[in-house]
Length: 349
Image (cartoon, rainbow, N blue to C red; front, top):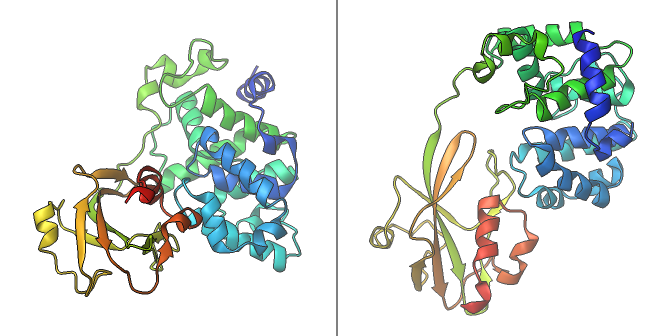
């Protein structure tokens, strides 16, 4: 039995029961694929369920505000996915009358849809013979065929796409694509794969040559930057605080945060006292301050590590642009801010 048949046979007996697999609705498949970009199924599934419940159709999603979409997305990270999701929903709803493109090439034109996502939607929703290549597929193919070409290189991307395209079951492209992705996610896992009971173990090059732990090969990432954040958690006698919307481009674009001061190192209370606050939200305010966390809260992102302190600023009355502290939960915020809001008892000040 060849690679293709062994894989689809394994899938028939081991496939995961996932809600978007019970539908050929391109909206559901597109939604699941966008959520699962850079997110594992166990983390993404509750978000998928929440989005389908709140926005049953692409029109419902298109008619939502970006703020509502970001709030529902909160905690998934990589917020550009949510912004692209909303933009594409509006385009499909209002420009394409709610009809998703039914082929790979036109799907590629949608915002936030790349080769992998277009291939997945085209094959699963429309049965187009288009091979998917994601992290799971890279891992399966590199191990099985013993390929050492870096998967995040231009040469590697082309090589693995061509290989996957040569292997795909042309009669059952949807099944093959889902089979190889599921196989990589649950059988040929990154660490401690189940090689002993693997249906491909007799012909797996990585297993025969003891290369399981070294494949796939990935080029080193760009150096991670370190930043030091100081959030000013302002609270006045009327239980009001200040939230600011991040409008500049970046991972947290259009999310809300407490006023922020960046520093070149982690600050002590004495060093905070010496800061020039004339250009901050504290300008002309009389206030008392205290440090919420003595040790930095380290928030690790793909390209930067944020060393964060929250400074509690108590004052008699804040100026304009305030909200009640009880309304903080209504705003879309980065998970770093959300975790602070959930842990800090505003009502006991």
